[in-house]
Amino acid sequence: MEDYPKPNKRRLKAFAFDPSLSTRLETIMINQLSLEVPWEELEPGPVGEYLEVIDVDPASSAAYPR
Image (cartoon, rainbow, N blue to C red; front, side, top):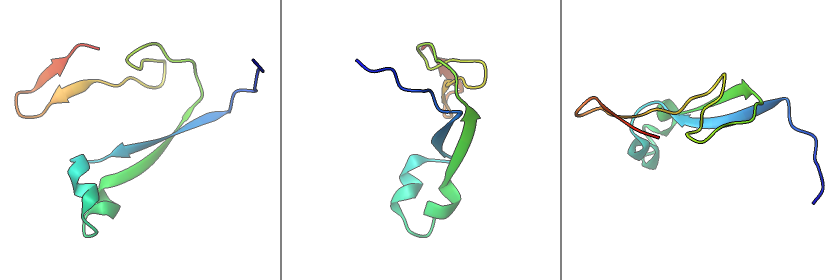
């Protein structure tokens, strides 16, 4: 297996609201955004110094474990 150099940053696509809004041409531009964060090794979750994904259910405000 070859070792490749790590990139300087990671580009992530995020949804500003509900992912289903991306299926409509009228709302696709306001719903999707791209984030650039410094590259880092991530732990499961994913969790890092700059990035952590937290699953929250808006209807109940419940946060789900990783």
